[in-house]
Length: 298
Image (cartoon, rainbow, N blue to C red; front, side, top):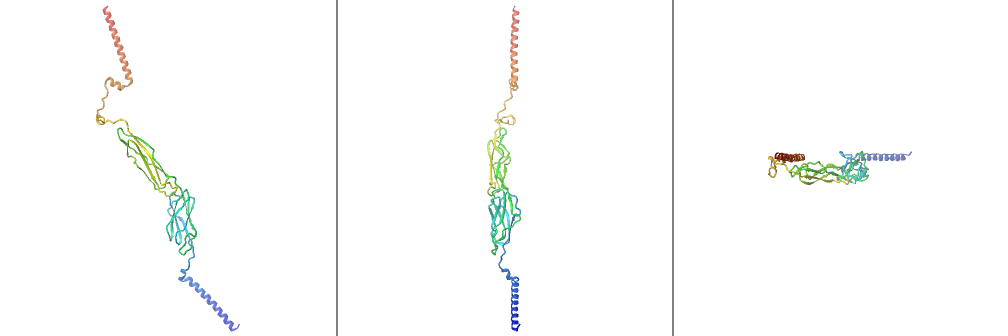
């Protein structure tokens, strides 16, 4: 090999070695220098959605709450997919940006499951990377549709007054609530144990519950029943034997007539028999005396 060829080979090797060293230095400097932090973010955000702590399951109450958690800040909560068999159709979340959100699901129209997830690509991180589809451990709640809210009133009542009273105090049982969503408020427009005048009083009772979605009991119901107070015949004698009008009470009957009034039909029969015997006796005595008188004349 000539001296010229050797020099050319050495120069080429040195050039290649210099490029390699410079390249390695640039790469190393690039990864280790602060400038690397400003490189473009291409990592899509991940997301989970689970039942909120304290969410009842099963439940008949709306809304049903779930928590959404992203791996990094995103511009909003994303699109909530409402699946399951209960027919939920409304989902409300707070505005972004953020990493955690709460979604409230309502509008269930039948008993069944409420299942939610976050649609893939429905939001982005701050670098514009679309999210991945959500993952979950427990994102299902069983919903039990309440029946129609119904109020069953107490039975109608009929109460007699004390003699001479203008009315009576009447006690009745509380109405019975069927179905509905707690908490509920129940009340009547007349009180149990109150004074009710003679006549018919209609009592109306009402209930309202906490339902707010279609098919969740209606929220309000009412029912009525009647209280009838009847006057008791007769009067009660006042103290001292005087009647309420101030007249003295009639004295009890005395003598034969009084005995007759007090004794009844049997006394009438005996009295009639006694009178007949007395008549027969008188006739017999009269005839005997007449016969005796005639003999004395002869």
